[in-house]
Amino acid sequence: MSLRGVRKKKDQILSEEIQELSRKGNFIHQENVELYKKVKLIEQENMELYRKAYGARDVSAANATGFAANHGFTVSRDVHGSIQLQLSPPAPQNSETAETATESR
Image (cartoon, rainbow, N blue to C red; front, top):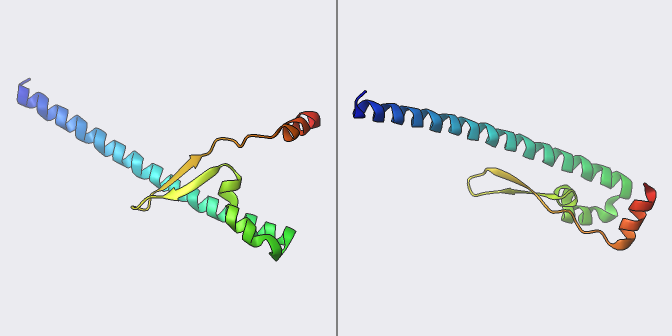
């Protein structure tokens, strides 16, 4: 096989790999969009339940913290509209909370 043939084959393989990675990236982006919608729906449901449980008096506090912040992850968008989810490190427990959790087991 000539050098030109080898280069052509290499370019073809690389092009196919790029197309496959692009398809995977599009699929992952679509999954992220769907997950974002689910998070928003759950956050709405959570807010409705919060209103039922506590009434309108604490709704502004619930809106400030939000479902995502209370459950250890953040949801953000970049300039092009893609969605990125990121886990946050667990909040440190104070000694009383840790003792209570240990005793209840």
